[in-house]
Image (cartoon, rainbow, N blue to C red; front, side, top):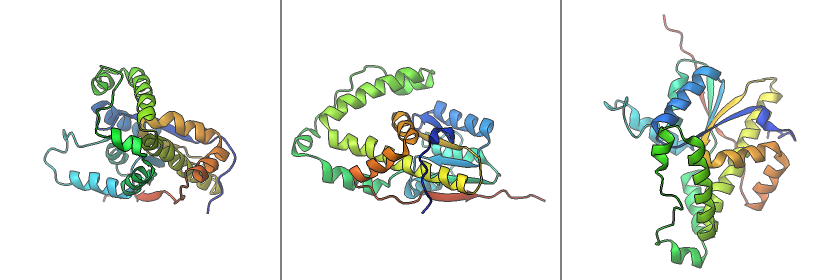
Length: 233
C-alpha cells in the first residue's frame, strides 16, 4: 500500500472540469493534453465504462462526429503514440447503484417519481458550448443543493462519496510518483460538479481518510491502463 502523505496534493494534480459529451469539453481535453503533455492522466471512469466507450468507437463510421464520444475517451485518444499512464479513478456503476438503493429513505422513494425542480431555465449544454462555463457551474451548484434537499442520500453517493474515493485515488497516484522520484503532474478530467470537492479533499489528505471511514468506502487502487509508444519503421 502506497503511503498517502499529509501534503497539499493540488500541487501535483491539474483538474479539468467538464460537461460530459459536449464538443467544448472534448476540445478542452484535446487542448489540455496537447499543452501539458502529461505522463499521467486520470479520468472519471471505471473499467467497464471505459471499455464500453472505447469499444463502441471501434470501426464506427461516425467516429469523427459521433455524439457518443465523451471527453474521457477523447483525452485517451488525444495522447496518441506516447508513453503515458491512464488511470481510472471512479466508483463502479454497480457499486453506485447498490449504495443508492441501500441509502434511500422511504421519503426519497416516495418522491423519486416526481420531476425534480431544476431551479434554472437555461440550457446548460448550450451555455457550456457557448463558453459560459462559470454560469453553468454556478447553476449546477444551485441545482445540486436543491436536489440534495429532496434526495440527500442519492446525492451523498453521487457527489460526496465519489469525491472521497476519487480524491483518495489521486492522492495515491501522487504519492506513488513521489515515492518513485517522479515530479510529473496528474492531468485529471472529472465532471464540473466534482472539481471543488475533490480539490478541497486533496488540500487536506487527513480529511480524505475521515471521509472514507465516514462513508464506509473500501479503497482500491486506481486501474492503470499503460500507453506505450510504438516506434514505426
